[in-house]
Image (cartoon, rainbow, N blue to C red):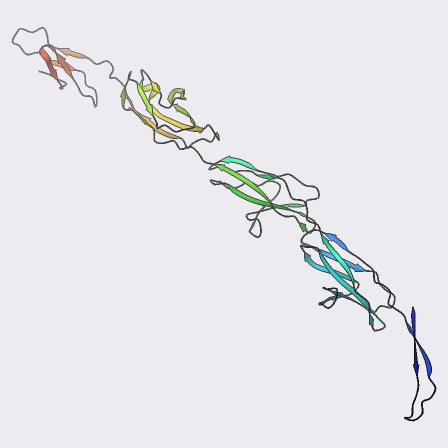
Length: 321
């Protein structure tokens, strides 16, 4: 408490009366105290001052001097904050406004998640994930680092079928707070491409089958086919084929030696012709010189015939007279 002395005299314009002493007592307003607040990005701050006896109002400003009056009252709940912010508060007593004191809402970002990236082959789904963190109540998957769309909630995410490398972004909730987003990458390796496969089909039984494909670098070849056939050669052969064991589809699949990704299988149909069985050839010999010889063979649906004999004889007829 402080005092100041003042003196007053009255004058009638000619004479001045005796001076009288007046003592003014100056009682300063007591300092205001309050409590700051710590929280995470996106949460509301709660600031509170300790009430002062006789105070009739409390004023909250956005600046130490001047600024804008933004709230009145003992407690101030802020809007959601993403950065540390200081507010300034004073009080009113006996018509006097106290000095302002600063109260700060301190924003401490939540720790970021740890990503578990994955690598897949094209045309597959993936299941990227994050490592769980203490006190997380929800995990949020987005398609963009900021903004974007919420596409999933949970520790892991089963993606749609992917053909290109894709990045997802994951945050988590802790109470009303949401952490920053962590990038989770699904690396997509391309598939090797098996070009068209060919063969020397159609074949007759007991001939050699030749399977062919173009050279592709940095791959392993795997052929499969009828009767349990497999081969890791680029252009395999099968000798002495027969219809029952070797006719059908032969399929090639390539495997990348770098990524272990497998190509889309490609196939070729091999047609093997069965030799006619139990062909019976007859003639009307013996005959006298100058007579005609009749040659005949058993009938077989769809067959063609080839006769050969002495003196360069040939015929394509079933019956030769």
